[in-house]
Image 1 (spheres, rainbow, N blue to C red):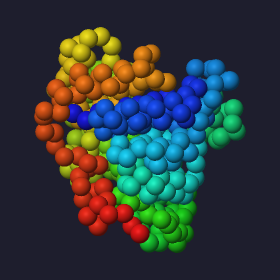
Image 2: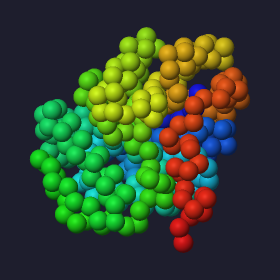
Image 3: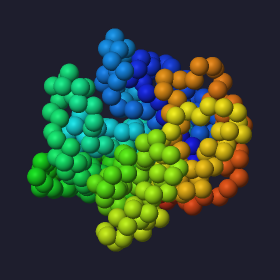
Length: 304
């Protein structure tokens, strides 16, 4: 089992607090540190500061050393495909090849209305998501890239610098396991993330992901299966039992959502000390994002 710390900075979390948690998670042995991508409090407290996701990721890229960094998820409604490709590639370079890109269709209608962001019907948003993923991957991997879709057109476009990770940073598709999400993940994603499912739900959804992979001719083992769940409560034994239940149904990575941070300092470190060793004794299948040949070209050296 692999562990990522998930945060919700749109509820007033400052960059300094975000950095403190990221550095504690890195020192404690978490594989990755993720944040949501929203520009407004989702709890309706509008005076709360809501920092920009990719601006803060760039800061963390320079103030951490080994922990992977990502968004879960960036709505494709917020940015044009080139803006997504460019910012993620830039932060990947800045971090030495540690970025992961979560993409979603967008869901908070009120947030879009407040800022004048178009919010098409759900079917169109999924169509756009499929096109955006194709464009981002093409811009990352091709010297020149063209694409003609229903919603986006790109003509002979270059995107430099390219990401440091090869062939490109992992792309995560997140949601609740609906058929369209599974189809997108099977065709384009490096990882499928399920939002707060019970283990029983995972055991029903993952076979449907396997079916979606067969339809497109992809090996289902290429896709990491992950879940985001609330920060676990209770004793270490209770926390271990809850995580073990997810491992038993095929979950390979868990995002522990700590919101704006734990109530007590040292909680992240204590969890890592008391819970992580139970699962780190296992040797899980090597994932797409952790394979050495996928993370950096030229034997791990950065491009000069």
